[in-house]
Length: 306
Image (cartoon, rainbow, N blue to C red):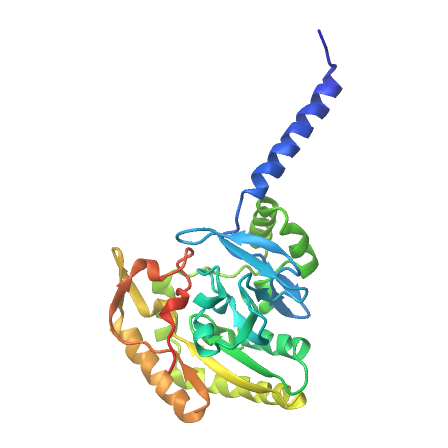
């Protein structure tokens, strides 16, 4: 009968635990796509494959060597670079054909340079690095969060703690990635406050439209030289916020006070910046599952443009 000493048993036990963790790890998905800072903007890991939880099934994410999300069903079409935050990533879709932008640009393959906490000013840095001269690009603005990220209080570094090299490595270990992200969040002296739906609504109602318009003016002043430097052509798409709705059981009901203020903001922006295209939104009830798994993004099919 074979007998092992304590040291041998310990080593075998550790090997067993490590092997079990690897097996379990490969079956796990991220609740939020992994991301890290790269040249002062937020990016998905570079040249990786990973899965993200969704309402109905797990989503397979593929990124290229620059950290842009690409799709496995892409045809051989011209690339269209899209810049924005997590809303444009398609957190509910596996196939490119189901992305709302594919309906607007059916003859292009989407390359999504987007990630959580990638605010408008971070988008400008990404555009500078990830475009070439005379290129046509799409810039998206997620009104759910970006209207707060264009004010002076937004600090990108308080929200994105991992470097892209570490994030790319840890993408292989979802459990470890989530654990480190959690430790960094709670150990930070400047950790951001996570607001619920009603707090987001209150923040918007207390944020004067005149102040938002002023901040937009400052942002577009910064955008112009970036566009001019490379002679870029672009479209600017503005998506409506998820917190325009109140939750009522399994339904989402339009909050009319929020809707009316948002509508006035859109009207003012249309006058000042007629090139902006806005997603359509009208007062109505929609299903709760019109939100993604994290309940902080609208599903891709909720965005329709003229």
